[in-house]
Amino acid sequence: MSNELKQFNRRTLLAGAAVGAGALALRPSAAFAVGQTVTLADIGVGDPNGDWSGYEKATGNKVNLVSIGNGPSAVLNQLIAGGGRQTYDIINIVGGMQKPLVENKLILPLDTSRLKNWQNNEYIASYFKPGSKGFDFIGYDGKVYGVPTILQGDSFAYLPEKTGGELNSYGALFDPKFRGYVALEDNYTTAGQKTALYLKAAGLVDIKDPSNMTKEEIKKVVDFLIQKKKEGQFRVVWSSFEQAVNLLVNQEVYVMDCWEPMVFAAKAKGVNAVYASPKEGFLLWAMAAYLVAGNRSPEKLEASYQLLDFMLSPEYGAVITNLRGYMTNPAAPEFASKSGKFDPVTAKKIADIDAGVKTKFQSGGTWQARWPSNIEAYEEEWQRFKAA
Image 1 (cartoon, rainbow, N blue to C red):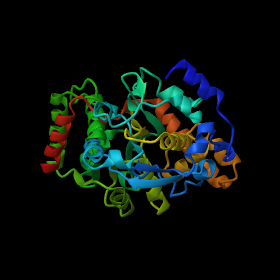
Image 2: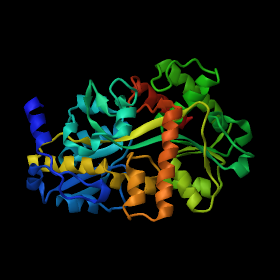
Image 3: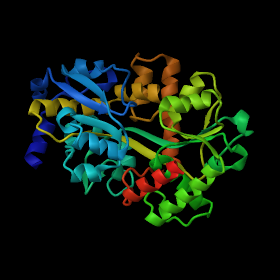
Image 4: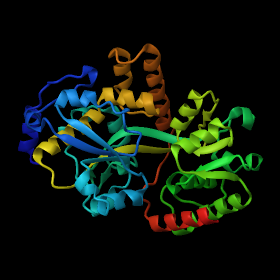
């Protein structure tokens, strides 16, 4: 974009259509985008329970939410062969797979000057700056492609009454005393990488980078998992949110590789589940919303940018933090406490979640590998684990 156009965009920003503290700033061109319907393909956690009223009232546009799978290969197949390029305006998935999306010309680079809520966002500035591991979750070849809508650090859950107290290592997933009461996610980018973190920290396997293993390293990780599987360590390899929650609620497993929202869901059903703070570090990740490449009118593109900006707003962030248990926007806790949209108890919950996830990023870990260099080997080895 030319400097003249950048200056024009900055000069023409207006302060219209406020939505509490999560206001969207509309440009003059936004007037021509009224009446658009933006199709957002989301993996589920970015849905504010169907309430897009903040965006719709501010812009005069609507959101058509559709479901999309989160597996890296499944995302590519949906866009390339499944008609996604013709159907979707935005995809909101776990980030970190810009390389194949860009190389297949499936997404567009972002003009962040069109996103009011990108500016002065402490989390973007801190965790996604160019040259950092976090930038690899939203950028590629020096360009920004993804809007980080959700931030989180993953570990594992456990039931302290069954485990006999606190657990603070991924080694608990492989401890013989929990044999038959452990579950793993069917996902090499989560369960596989957490296993690698443990094996490296314990000195059991020489792994240089758990987030981007060589073919030999991922083979050794899977050899270890297969041995544990043959010993009866794992009760099940789960594949859905509901299945994982039920495993905890029914106390079919005592230790489970999972996402923190599953712990929130189990607690809501009266189960004392705890999300661990492992000494090996958290598996850090972020959702990224991408503009899908396609024949989009200037009006539809403007409406899509407006939706991306809304997804970076304090209002949307506070709603998603409350619903999903993720950190979203640095201004979300303040919005929750002052907007009147949430009661004091919920506002405190939102602030506590934000603070908790922030601690994970500060304590460190490794970023989840969504598209490792040897992804074919990862997929082949994971299939070998499942078939064993």
